[in-house]
Length: 315
Ligand SMILES: CN1CCN(c2ccc(C(=O)Nc3n[nH]c4c3C=[N+](C(=O)[C@H](O)c3ccccc3)C4)cc2)CC1
Image (cartoon, rainbow, N blue to C red; front, top):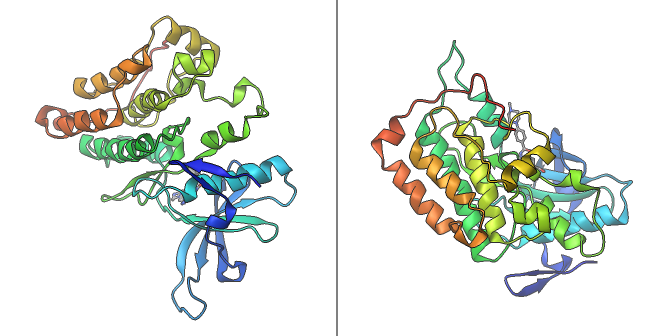
């Protein structure tokens, strides 16, 4: 079975807590994961306990290839090494037999992209969110990214779809929750899964989609696109553009336009993340400082939210 290097140490499956299957009860489906279903469940921490802990359970279908088995295991290994409030916590695994389970912290608010789209102002209801809410979401993700950066871990797929919320209500916390692409690189040492279509082109910098070069500055570029997703309240970046058009647009210096009503201080962070030269892009500590500045700027905070009406085709 695969072993795994993180922060200078090697880990294998035995390092993960084994969750006895009989202490786990799957209650309802939460959604379709990259492998199989993701369920909400209840986990009895200690056999005698009356209280059961709500959890999320990722399942691997019985009829899986050895490759999928390995990828699934590797994702557990990857997540098992992290310990940060803005990264979804791994509770344990059930790998004794099929179906295999990865048991994770339950986040009940759903994914960030869906949350943003659901929160758009409608004529019957002004947006439930304000600029501060949006910036707080961005701060949470940047904190998670800063932790990964400090541990020299490249996520490779920072995007609103891969982030989850503890709740939709105020006091919500956003966490980075999907490490599928990072896992890809560990398994792509000897083979590439699928064709180009697998790559999140609209979140990738030129050096990544042209030359396959991935560094922490790749995640910074993607984070800039996540900022745009948040400020546009969940729009698809480069709306209506095919991936190949986005690649040529970006290579020739084209960039996403500021979403309507996007404060200039926030747009300035995005564009700094999209510098053509990776070393010129800020690190996540700097991004957090700039976001703190936005949160202390009354004009920025007072900016009303407005969804995009007609999006200009940028390609
Ligand atoms: C009215 N709404 C309808 C939607 N609803 C939901 C919809 C989905 C979820 C959900 O998947 N929660 C999860 N908690 N922990 C993990 C989850 C997923 N995980 C995974 O690892 C998944 O692969 C994953 C990762 C990132 C993003 C999505 C899915 C780990 C929770 C509430 C709230 C109420």
